[in-house]
Image (tube, rainbow, N blue to C red):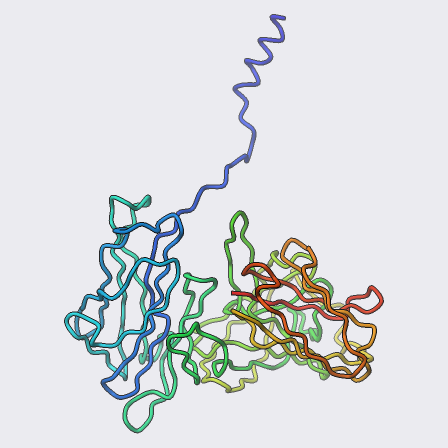
Length: 392
């Protein structure tokens, strides 16, 4: 008995290695610039999104909201506590009225929080938009003859309430959540590994994505990476990918996503390159990996795929519903579409028509909640193509 007690006392002093509890992360409320648009040289309209986490939905949590430009500072008093809401304002909603320059400016929105109600020590949240300067995120915006803009500047959110970066949009959506229509550019070219072997397909378990299209999301109890869009490979072996219109100062890495584990990602270094494209422009950009973690065995094109299968999803991301457009060189009869959640569970199953074209509508209410979903096209138990749906 004495030896047993000594054993228990002894092991009580042994600390297991690398056992760490996941810290509880409390995110502060914040107001941020969702969209900015000029209809005239001196007339601006700003869409502000106010996001407040559920555990901070109490009156008095936000002390004040202040907007600053190079012309001065002003207070905005038209907000109210809400989990997530868009507010459309102009200079007349501020005290005092505040001018923005349509050519170039630095605009900041400050959210001052009540220090007695906030768990963290950060009582001021700042969101900044810089435009019109050569090396900034938005170096140029197209203007009309009256000094107004033909484009707006929009914030890209990695999830509701979490702005990531700004992009240019040919189709402003003031008072509505931002979408991708009229805002995308195309990069295309040849894609090589570090031995200059041509990468001409999503080889093995990899999908490839530009880092600007990669987003790290935190859900209730887990976090994961997801791509806004991945490389597509053409019949000649070249790649193509979409991106949002902005100035990318440097792209020194790509991200490799694994088919079997959508949340797992590996960074792959490449020769740096830059691009600054307006919406709907196309850039030919060869990409050369410098990373030895991914190599192809042979410098040759993959054999042509019989029964070519073409898929378009729009809109994606979506808020209410999206449509999946299907087209094949042969009949779609016998093929199925599965919608799968991030945990691998099938939430919807569709049997395709016996024609060469079909359209499937996916409603958010049938999915049950916002998040990332996979679509998978099946023929006789074999997966033909997969992709992602982003439900906001």
